[in-house]
Structures are given as structure tokens and as C-alpha cells.
Image (cartoon, rainbow, N blue to C red; front, top):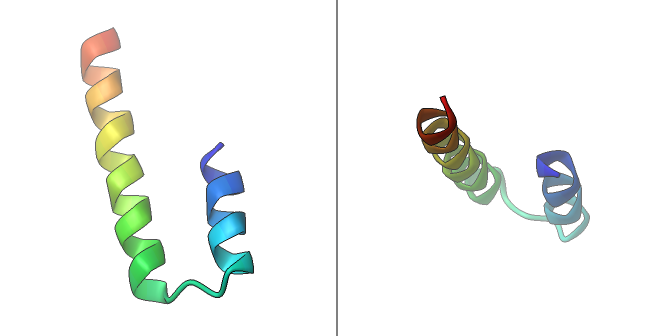
Length: 38
């Protein structure tokens, strides 16, 4: 899912900065999900 979103952003010529922010955002979400699940 994350890879699909990244691919869409790359297709739209997103800047590296936007891409990094998005990756950090998803890292935070997956970390908190792991915290709740485990």
C-alpha cells in the first residue's frame, strides 16, 4: 500500500521533501499501529 502511494507521488513529480514527509508520516502511523496491536 505504501509503495503504491509512493509510486503515485513519483508519477506526479513530487519533490523529495514531500516524499520524505509522507514516508515519515507512514512510519509514525505503522509504529503506533504496532504499539496498539502488540
